[in-house]
Image (cartoon, rainbow, N blue to C red; front, side, top):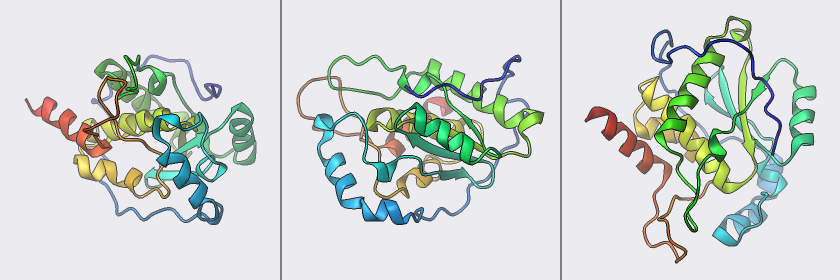
Length: 215
């Protein structure tokens, strides 16, 4: 797993208290010549579903996708060396990660989404980093393993943060991830070892989260 760079000491505050809500912007699919060149192999990878190898093609790794314009991006790394190379190449950026996207305990072929405890802890983490006075002038980049299941749970955590803290709608929170092409994400499924007959996309999970909060 990639190293957990970026952790800083200090008390984790309540994420809803001092976080300034950021309105969503229009998101355009990120343009990356290398990704476009390998789009076919990436699409083949994703079509393999549960039979896909653990790591994605290089076209889907180490590419930064902006989530909160000018403030927060998301990326995926295949290994520790790729993380170190990214940090050394762009020292003005602040790379960080956590264990939360890898916290789901599967029953069979299911892989997520992660539970509400992880969601709350993730929101606390994001608040801590985005409000840290030492990081106010730096662009933050949250990274995870270049693995479809982990990337999907990361998108759910980031989307949940946008819905719960910044009050984006589920559609607005899902949009920056839906704009990524080729998509590195898998639809969530039921907890069986049979072929999935009812998939849940990211926006479906975020709608469920919003509904739970409203109730």
